[in-house]
Length: 594
Image (cartoon, rainbow, N blue to C red; front, side, top):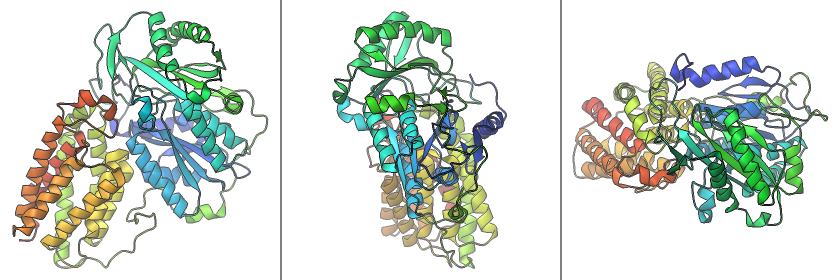
C-alpha cells in the first residue's frame, strides 16, 4: 500500500513539488498543476504535452525533457486533470508552433483536454488532442476506437515527441501519433490491486493463485480471471493475445518495439524472468526486437502486475523510436542537435496576455464573462440559500467519501469520493467569496462551477462544473427566481451535461439521475406545486433512479470494460448526484419560492 504521504488530498501536489526539486535540470513547475521543460525552445516547435492522473510514474511527468515531451499536465491520483490545468500548462509550454495533448482514451481526459484545446484554438494557438487506444482487452477489434490507453501510450508519445523534436508540423506530429497508435497493441495482467494514498484497503483483490487478465492502469481489475502458473505460461498468454491482434497494415513488417512494463510492485528480477520467455516466443514468431524496454514505464501506484506492448515499426517509426531523449526517467543516446538553450528563454510576448490557471467567473469559451450588477434585495436571499446548499453538500460528501470510493472501485478506479470532495471544497470556497461580494446568482454559481471543475478534474468535475454554470445562467440577477426560472435552470444544466459528456439515459452515468430529476421537477411545477415541493419530489425521483442503475450495464467511461462486474452496483456518479439533491432539498427548500 501507499505508506508515505502527508495529507492524502495533497498527495499529487506534494509529489510534483518533490519531483521538480529532484530534477531541476529537466523540469520546472508550471502554473495550474504540471511541469514543463526547464529550458524553453530557442525556435518554435510543436509542444507535445502528455497528461492524465498521477499514480503512473514515470508516466507522465517522468518523460518531460529533450527528445520527449515538452510538458505534462498532472491530475489527482487516477483522475483526469481539469481543462483549466491543461490550458495553463499548455500556455506555459507552447512556443509558437502549436500544441498536441496526448493521453489515454478515458472519458475525463477526452473531455477536459478537448475543452483546453478548444480554448487555446479560440485564443489563436493551434491545438489538437490525441487519445491512445492500445488495450486489446478493453473492447473488441471491431470497436477499437473504444479501447482505453495503457502502457502503449509510452511508444506513441515517444515517436510523436521525436517527430516534434525534428521540427515536424502539428499535422505531421498528429499523423505520426495516429500511425504509431494504429500499430500498437497491449495486454496486461494483475496479481494484486493497488491502494490509494490514505486508504486501508486495495481497490480490488485477486484470489490466491489467480491473475486478472486485461487490467486497467487506474486500479481497475482485469476483465477476467485465469490461473497463475509459470512465467512460460504467462508469456504464452500475453504474446498470443497480441499476435492475434497484429495490424493488417503491418502484415509485412516484422520489426517491433517491445515494452514489458511493471505496474508498480512486480520486481525487476521477476520481469526479466518473464522477459526471457517473452523474447523467445516473439523470436519464434519471426519478429525482430528493436531496442526493447523492460521495467516500470506506466505504473499504477503499488499494483502487482505487468503488461506487454508491441508496436510494429516501419522505417519512419523505427527512426523515431530510436531517436535520442534525455528526461528524468528515460534516456537514450545523446542529444547531438540541442534544440533548447542552456537557460530558459524569455516567453513570447503574446503569452503574457493569456490567462493561466482557474478562470473564476470565466465564460465557457475561456474569456471572463461580463459580471451582472451586484445582487440586491431578494436576490441576496438566493445567494445565501446557494451558499447554504453548498455547505450541506460539503458535509454530506465528506461523510460519504469512503462509501463513494468503494462504490466506484467495483468497476472503476475508486477515486469518485475523493474527487467529489475536492470539487465541493473548491465550489464552496468560491461561492462564499462571491457571496461576500454580493455577486449575482449567475456569477456565484458560475464561479462555483468553474472552481469545482478546475479542482476536481475528471469526468464528474467537468460535468458538475458545466451543470452549475448552466443552472446559474438561467437565474435572475436582481430578485429571487420564479419556479419557472428554476425549471429552466435545471433544464439548462441537463443540456450542458449531456452536450459535454455525450451520455444518454440508460448509459449508467449521472444522467440517469439528473434526467428524471429534471422531468419530475418540471412536471410538479407545471402541475402547480411550489418550488420547494417540486424540488423535494424531484430529488426523491433522482434517488430512486440512481438506485435503479444497479440493473444497467455501463456504456461509457472506465466502467464500460467491466460491465458484468458493474451489474448489481449502482452508478457512483448517479448516486452522489442523488445524495446531493436530496440533501440540498432538505436544506434549501425553505427559501425557495412558493
